Image (cartoon, rainbow, N blue to C red):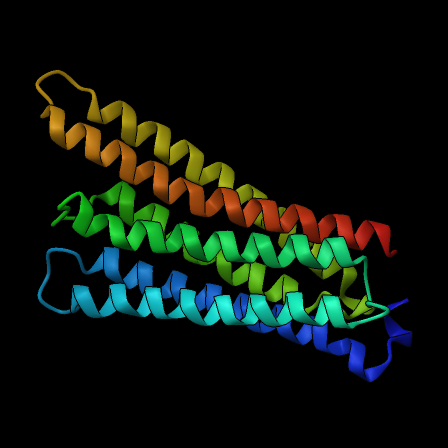
Amino acid sequence: MFSSLMPQRREFFELLAAHSERVVAGANATLRLINGLGGEGENVSALVAEVNLNEKEADKIKTQVIERLHQSFTTPINRDQIHALTTDLDKTLNALQDVANALDMYSIKQSTVEAREMASLGADACMRLNRAVAALGNKSRREETLSLCKEIEEIESRADTIQHKAITELFQEGANVWQTMKMREFYSLQEAVLDCCQDAAKMIEEILIENS
């Protein structure tokens, strides 16, 4: 099916790939932000602005995708699936934006080992998501794409384990109540990034199965 696509219909895949590239850029900025928190190397406000900028650029791409869906009589894959995938990518960047903006909202000045680990896993999952989206229109790369989706699901599971461990440690005897509450919420925001990546990966799997 994919090999017979008309050139103009390739635009959907190109737009989805561009959208996923913004996701990677946002995830990498978030990773640098959390890794550098409390240090002197990175400018926190500049990195938060970078995440927000990528989210805005991604919104423009999402709008383009939706406009093309309304304008096109035919689409290379189910139009509902195209809409669902670009929505999942949008949710992923929104989740990254929530993480970045939460630092100021909750006055988080220092990162933790767990926060850095989850940020790294988030960036890793987003990178694999980008590769999967970029390969989506190439039928010969189906197995590679499915493998990337499985890897994303495994990364989400690892992040879930780290989150549970981190939250358990927050509630140790003598813990500061305010610190515990705000870090629990922050870890949940980080986990949401991985959940959104997993949702996008599952949608890609659905697309591949339906068009195999």
